[in-house]
Image 1 (tube, one colour):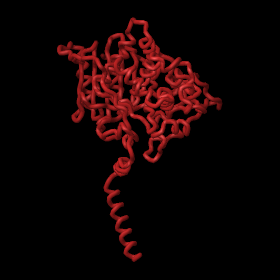
Image 2 (image 1 turned 90 degrees about the horizontal axis):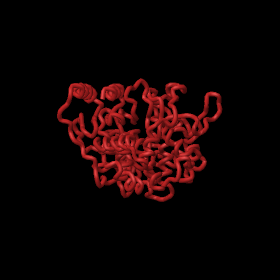
Image 3 (image 1 turned 120 degrees about the vertical axis):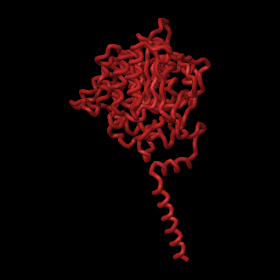
Image 4 (image 1 turned 120 degrees about the horizontal axis):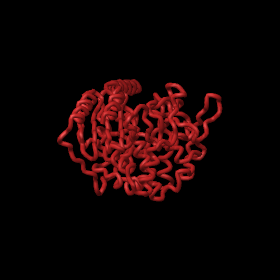
Amino acid sequence: MNKYIFIITLLFKISFFSFASAESTDEFLARQQLKKPLPIEGLQPYGLPNFCKDTNCTVSLGLYKRLYKFTPSKETKKYSIKEELGFSEKMLVRKADSIFSSQSTLALLMVDDGKIIYEKYKPGTDANTPFQGQSLSKGVASMTVGAALCAGYINNLDDQAKKYNDALDGTKEGEATLAQLMSMSSGGLRGFSPFGGFPENGWDIGSFYNPAYKNIELMIKKYSGSQIKSDGTMVKAGEEFSYKSFDPLAISLVLEGTEPGRFKKIFQEELIDRVGFEGNVYWVHDEKGYPHLANAFIANLRDWGRFADFVMQSINSKENNCMDNYVKDATKTQIKNRTNMWGSNFTFHEMMGGYGYYFWTDKKNSRNGGVHLVGGFGQMLSINPSKRKYIVMISSKDNNEFMSFYDLYEMF
C-alpha cells in the first residue's frame, strides 16, 4: 500500500513541477496571488498599467495591485485640435515624430494654450488607455496635500508628520515636517538610484517574496534610518535634499491619518473637480488602504495633460486663494539639488538645480525654465507657465528619449 502511495505522490510532484516549469516564475506567482482574498476594489486587471514592451514597467506591483477608482469630474476641460500649424510648429511635429518613432515611447501630447499641437499613441493604446505615471505621481500627491491643507484636513505644512499618524512614531520621516517630506529633506536615508529611490539596504523591497511593499507602515518601520554625512554626523531634517521614496510614502500615512477612507474622500471631493479629469483615474494602495503616493497614480494621456493644465493655470492665477498660493509654493524651489556631491549612486536628475514640493525646478541651461516631473521607465511631464504650454510623454522603457524630450521642450 505504501508503495502505491509513494508512486502516486511521485507522479503528482513530477506533473506539478512540469506544469510550473512551463510558465515563468512571475506567471506562477501571479496565479498563486489570484487565489488570495481581494479587497472590495479588487486586484488591478492586467493591461491597466502602461502597455509595456520589453520591460515590466509596473515593477513589482503588478501581482497584487489594489486600486482606488475615482469617478470623473463634474466638469472637464475640453481640448481642441490646432488645425493650421505654422513653420515652427511643423518643425516641432517633426521632432516629436522622431521621439515617438522610438520603440519605447507609447504616447506623446503637446498642448499650446489649450490647443493640441501633437497627440499620438502606439498600437494597443489610445486616448482611453490608463497609463501609470510612475514618479509623475508625486506631483499629483503634492496637489492632494494642497487640497487637504485648503480643506482643513491638514493644519500647517510645518507640522511634524507623526502628528497625523502615530504609525510614523520613532521614524525620521515622522519627526520631519510635511514641508520637509515634500521637499525630500526629511533627513531619512538617501534613495539609491538603481532601486528607484528606495534606500540601498532596501534592495529587496520590490521582490515578489518581500511583503514590505504591500504594507507601507511595515516598510518604513523596517527600512527607515538616518542620512549620514561624509564626516559621520547625521543630516538634520531640512538640511539636505536627497531623492527618496520614503518621504512621499510617509505623506501617504499622513493623508489617510487614523480615519479609514480619508485619503479617498480628500482626493475625490477636494481635488478631482479642481483638475477636471474626464476619465476614471486610479491610485494603487497597499493592503491597509494607504495609497502609494510615490509612483502609482494612473490616468489616460489627456487627463495627465489636464493635470498639467491645472498646475499651469494655478501658477498663472492672479487670485489670492489657498490652492493657487499652495501651487505657486509647490512649484518653486524649496531646496537646492546638490545630490551629485554624494557620487553617482545618489545623483537624481542633476540637470535640475532645485526641488519644490515633489516638482523639479531650476532646469539648468534652459531658456524656458518651467517645472518638471520625471518618472521611471521614461515618463516625462514639463510645464512652461509663461508660454502656457506643456508636454507629456508616456514610455515603457527608460532609454535616452528624455534628452530628446527636453530638446523638444526647449523648442516648444
